[in-house]
Image 1 (spheres, one colour):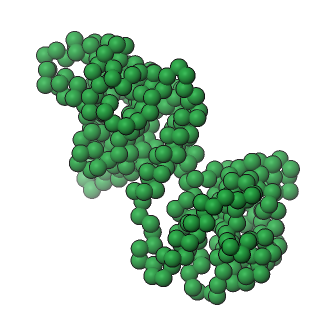
Image 2: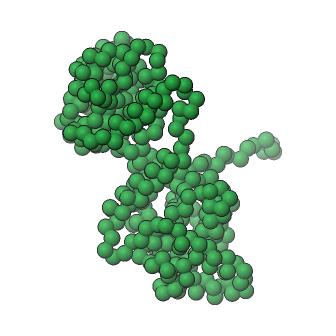
Image 3: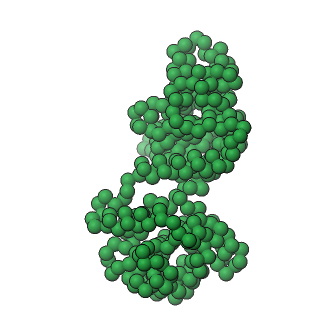
Length: 340
């Protein structure tokens, strides 16, 4: 039987970040470490670790670049010896012009001026490419122009004195900030709650001696859960682990000890299906993590104690948001009045 002609092409996945790099130089060191750092922040990142490279760049890869919000170009010694890398670079710069894509260069043990003018060790790789394609001067000139333009962008330089782990953390945080700015606030159509959200966001930047706790208090149906959800979605990528525990009042009525929810919270945050708050090692791992947890519709401080233990034992970088109809619940959880 003939194959059906009605089959559809799989939809292209959108990415936050596209990584362009020369595999033989940085795949198993800097680039893989950067990729892992971005993934830990829940940033959707494309790294072509499963592609077989040939002479021509694939149309699907070009489309992946188009579908990304940010392109990070990791210039290394042999980057310009690859026709594939230079084709990626041209596509990235075209997206910068036509789609306002953000382009961030990283100069990995090469000088930006050497990339700009194809000199020194960086220039040697490009010279080899020139020999191969000397019959196509227009294409070569296009690659030269692309290298010059990209090297003029603001970025980061890595040399022998650079602590790469610190720089990777800086780069991933910068990318996260840029993505947050690109993202809509999520409450443009939610009348009457913008002030509350802005108030909560202002509290996030204040200093705190220990775990930060913010309370959202009011009668049922006024939007406490919506406010907490908007804030959670805006900031969750800044944390190592996060969980939004909805409808604790309802869950507690089903099971007074919240057994299922307790297991799920810990399993998600620690990425461990066997995690158990009663186990010393699980508690120690939790206390070392920078976590964000929303406890929604809490009726008793004991519910939070049952779910996660003593909040004050969490990492000082952690943030807890509690919504409730009873202000006393927040005071019992040691939420300062200024944070309610």
